[in-house]
Length: 329
Image 1 (tube, helix red, strand yellow):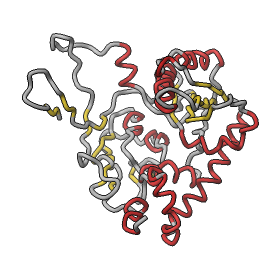
Image 2 (cartoon, rainbow, N blue to C red; image 1 turned 180 degrees about the vertical axis):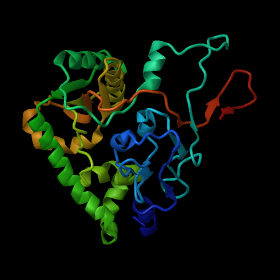
Image 3 (tube, rainbow, N blue to C red; image 1 turned 90 degrees about the vertical axis):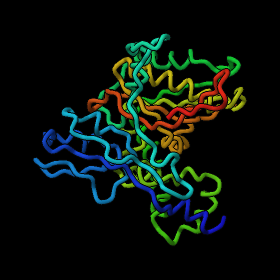
Image 4 (cartoon, rainbow, N blue to C red; image 1 turned 120 degrees about the vertical axis):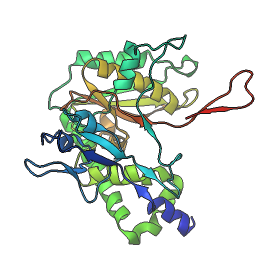
């Protein structure tokens, strides 16, 4: 790989992390934003106002906004990259709240129950030290089992782990791996040695991943399991029609939405996959199956409900009788 291309991927310039603002008049110094940030972006002195650290990795997840009981936090600038390999398009991406719902005739309407479930869903990364009952876990699994699949091939296998010792083994294996990768990543002298990974898996160097998730795990700000009491391995048949990832994505999101509807919360955690070899002799994976990703379940430690703004990319409409494409922005 050309050195300039490598540097664009591994040492990108013009990358801007999200910037959050705090309304000091509304802030009560409760500290929920600090506690609820998965990547520990905030610092706060006792009785003071939260401030973003000098070095931080915010990618505008809005968890701090949702956790704040007084609506004191707002987005001043969203994560974006202005140039190079990681350039975001448009730049920066506009954030918008959900559009006003309308009925088939164009009249203002209300969100229905399913829409509210989708729009209010949050990825939770802070859990109580409290088990989730098998009865509720089974309801989540049933939502996955009844998901649509390509050609009705139903290519999934679920492996549920609630044994704390096994989850800890996975966490330790992931930390050992990420700690080594992250220390190398931070060392400029190691950049030339990263060319093979940058060529085969450039997504590993996405600034949000390298500085945020992987960095937080390596620095022990959080374990890969997020301290959740339940880890579900989502495995799929390698022979699945239309591929494993598509089928598991559909199935897993069914599970995610049902988990939220039951009061428990969920989070997709691909970071746990490298920890699976540490417990491979325990999971009884079916022949021709492999684990695609994991999902954690648990009771939320903080308030995690409410609609937030999301990136909005232009939508292209191709209407009958139109002279050409119509772009809605």
